[in-house]
Length: 335
Image: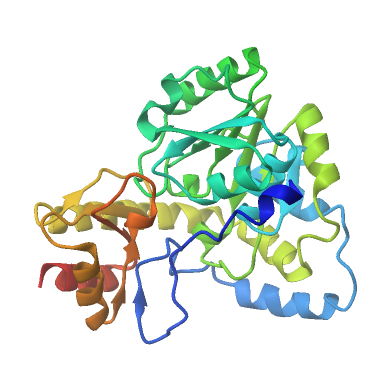
């Protein structure tokens, strides 16, 4: 991290509310959790009186099985955001150049600027058609947040090959890939994959995730990660969740079904963007974003103001939740 850059970099707005009286559609986390998680967390309490084993063998093994990659390529992190930070820290120096999608997750720009590097932006749906040669790092969000569209794996692998030919690192944020049928890019040479357990398993406060890379890139990530960066409860619950493949399949199907139902209900009152993710981006048309958000809040619902994303000025983002909750959202947005 570049000490000279830190003072000029601010925080990034995100969704989420701490008000339990409000129904939160602003954060894209699964409202369901796998059965048995609470017991695993409680059992980890006794072990929390000592430092966790810093090799995290059980977590890495479960992650390797889940992603179908070599467990030794997994680097445990305190959530996907730490995986992103590690990846940027070990690939960029002050003065380097990074290519970022727009609109997309605001933390990419923040992390690049904290390194003293310079971001360049390209439309997210044109990113894989760009020449990676002028850049030291390219970042891809798959599926893209907040638009929801996913990149086909063959196209990503072709672009990864172009990045290797150009000596450009590729960082692929797969925070929402669990909700799709697309396969991970974990294990692809020259690529860092960032993963989060927050979204699929509904545990954002647990802070569990991973970075995945091979060769020298993996060695850099593993050397740079903080000691004991994953707490004992996070490691144990994460290991358990990564083996709940039935829960993942059921969630994926529910989200697909409910996303289609929400799209049908909200279109044409809103400009609904096609999505493969557990959220929808809505253009509000002639209304103001502030009015749509305030009206929903009066109905006890929190929406994500998507105007904080680069290039968006008349959009909100809504999560895909349980059927009855989605019905409440539709009633609020169409009233």
